Length: 176
Image (tube, rainbow, N blue to C red):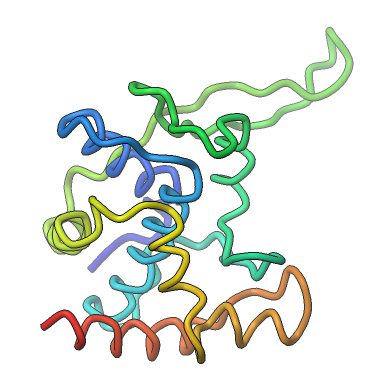
């Protein structure tokens, strides 16, 4: 059983960013966000409906987005994220001396201690590592996808976990 307070999108992103460095594969912000989203879906399917992390996945104009990852890596735009860049967890706190908010680096989280989650991430990575962001985007945009269902309700609608699970049951079944 996963302790859900333990994982954030950063943990999952860092798994993929580590694999990219190990294997010399390029990854753009689009590809990274799609891989983390797919990991969330695969985990719902293979881990009895357990959420991989609590942050909502939102329906933005062109795709399902995990906002924290989008904002963290957006400066790379469509270019690959530089090797050795990892997702960090920051805590914002009020800094009275300087007046205003300060960001304090809390940690650079990694997934290393949960065998089931690692098995899921490894399986996903082995299947999708050679896909680019556009190819992964095509998967997330299919007819009946959770993103399509959510975007009809409006921008920034949270994707429904039941929709995500049902969609990825079909996707995983096709791979077998």
